[in-house]
Length: 323
Length: 313
Image 1: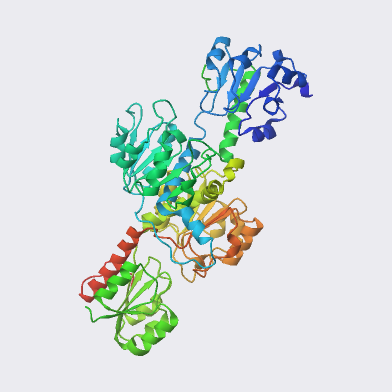
Image 2: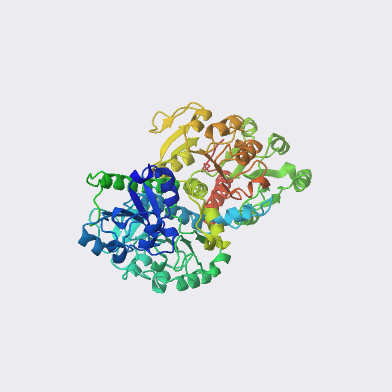
């Protein structure tokens, strides 16, 4: 019977929700608050659910779990989000109430790293441009080859050597790239050359790959000075956040040839993308899809399901929550 | 050397053509009527032929050039050249191995990612303004997949090494099993195709490997399988490939080569699971320049009586 299933209040909804619901509809009674304009208490009334029977929330950055939401649910014990960050959850309030907050771990790092490498190779060898060209006519004419050469020997500067940056480094090492990095702190367990200054990193790199989180310190970490230091043969790949790069400057540098090209999965004001980029062949654009693989989404769903399972059966969580 | 007659029979980098023109008495015979005219007047003086992936001397042409001493190919694949005839006549043959191995391997991984992760489609999605209407759909993860390599030569091995960085499992088919290889060997192409997620064609084109990718292999690769061809168009039965893709019997394809280049099957244009490239292969100006220099250096060595740099025959 439906009423015997534990209630799961869903805010957002998370990108993975359709997949999650289709796989776990037998385990939870979904309360899809995201689909209602009503304030939470009224919404719960329409679902014949008393606020005190809601013990779990599944959420995403689209709909914040504020202190108000938390206070209106006296039995709330767990908040699960399908992101790594928890900025959209009032974690202080959760701590006060002893509510567990579960985030994603490194499930999607390989997928994001794959995207970074995909974008880099595409820019270097003009794969998307070539595909556009080949699909224009049934007889392809002579093709204008990009200048440059193989990835081997290229110096790749990774900005942010966390889980994703580490996976990018591992992949590019197999292409014989030379890995260097800039991070908040030097990592003693890696032998890659560390640069405490991003401009210095850029001056000594052929490629910059952005893999760090967006914070006050990292906003516009790639600015005009960095791009000019990278130089006319340089390529930028961004799988972090759009605002890591000064986008207006980036567009200018690309149009003027101050850098060779860019592979971008993220933008300052998604889903808006500077239209000047659409005419360029030295740019590859992706709709924030670095983690959008079926495998990744399934992993995320499983992680959330396991955490909720453990909570509802009063077992300790397998992966420690962040509070 | 300016008096030595050289015949060009395949499309090459403009730099190579210019250098050949400067150094030798160059005759252009790429198109058949051009070639016929050259043969009529100069067949008896031609001492070298420069070939490429788009054209090389067959038995008839070799017979028609009594003074032919060397064929230097601007490519690593020499399927356009009648090697047997060259051997018989004592004609030397050189190609351009190694200089392009890494780039072709880099491009291969790029093609695999482009197909599985729909990179080109994602780029189209953004440029067309469709992202404003909603997110692009879920694609297929590459890391951890099983890669099947047809032909574990220089290029195949270089592709394998890169794929290992993505935690891929590697298996292969080759004429003979390689005892020193750590990768899993399958004794037939169909078995290889049945046991991998992505199949890469990286062997030379010979009479044995013509249409080595046929209906049976394509069906074995299956609705989730991806075919990557960076070898020669004739490795693949192209009409079979097209129908398999249209019918969904094959999951996707990344093709740099086609049976009748520069002709490309139009039916593939609208397919989001297909990436097509205009025979990019060795991919960049720098590598092609290195290949061109190898052609020139081989010719020079030959005419100076020095050892050839990269002889095949």
